[in-house]
Image 1 (tube, rainbow, N blue to C red):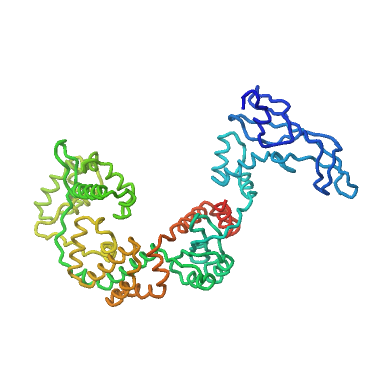
Image 2 (cartoon, rainbow, N blue to C red):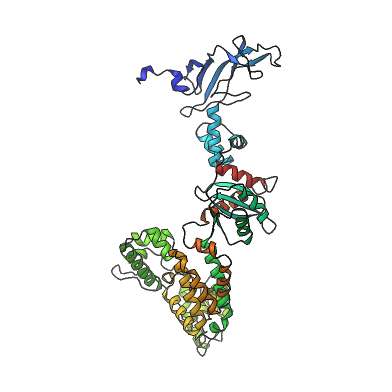
Length: 537
């Protein structure tokens, strides 16, 4: 179409009919557009009768979208018609312009639509700030009203759903969120988390084929009762979490093995510093770990593994793997690391060491602090005490023995991927397993379960349950026995790609909204209903 042939009506109101643009004044800071209705007749909204008898006309000034950051004033000439029906309670009525105005509306339809879109994306305050930046004057309450005016989305029959509970008031009031496991959209928010609440909802949706859930007995019972045709999928995260809890019980039951471990004297860890010579290589534990991790990441990259796949395989963060992948040499991971800063105690450490040796460690910290204060030290007593405790011991005393590993530490060694353990942790893990055969059996069972979980080979689960039950390990054997009561759902969770990750994300968003609306909602359920409506849009 030729530019000259484009009319002002097509340019300013391309989707509105029945109007004509009279004048446009863009000389000042405000753009004024005069528009008049051109329809010869109208339909009475009261009785539906059509008439062409004009009563009068008047100007309306509905707010419109800005143009180029400049405010637009719309002067709309509207006609008022007589109603021809004597029985109609309306004697006169105003003609509305479809797509532009509505009865008692102070804004055009396209402005209302824009505010609703901004409100859905950013809610009240943030949406009002964005609207002001583009030239729209609207308060946060106006944006919220535009959001509430949005029509409900069309009802859909989900094929796969995810259910999980969330706390409206922790320990007192709980609800259930139901999402579409394929689109990740919230379908409903239920007022409780028991069977009698979820079962009727599932019964009203007979087309559900897959239900992703945690290992809650109430959800399992509701799914079995109201949706027997659906395949239930137990979440892999909760399975691993339950196994980790069982592993901690197994370690706690054999804590005596940890107490009897042969311990070595505690040695101070060598500090790593950037070498002054550019040709020399960094040394120390940090450098050794950086060298090993760099080699591991590049070895996996050589096997055509992606960064996300490597991160899942090693149990690291994706950005950590990315930094090692981008480093050509392992030295790049330690270059620029800050050196230990000088302490105000450094000039006096020689004196402290000499006085400690002369008195055979029988001098008090307070005396030493006074001596170096007289020599110009302006630090606190705590600095001197901490340095003496970590660096000096009496000549005739033996260094304190290293404390045995805690139950949580050993549990971490058993449940973490071996590649994420440093050399000291690997050696300590090896010592613990060699000392306690029961924990060695637990480590083997945990490793086998982790392999099934990551490779989705849940068909091997019955054999694993048999081995774990026969092992007689507290926690782990109990966990294995519990899997038999929910075997179908657990097997589905360990053989299919379905999981409860999306519904956990929905719960996190509910928690975020709950914190944002703390003290503002008149009812405890209002924020959950708002969340459901907002997400469904």
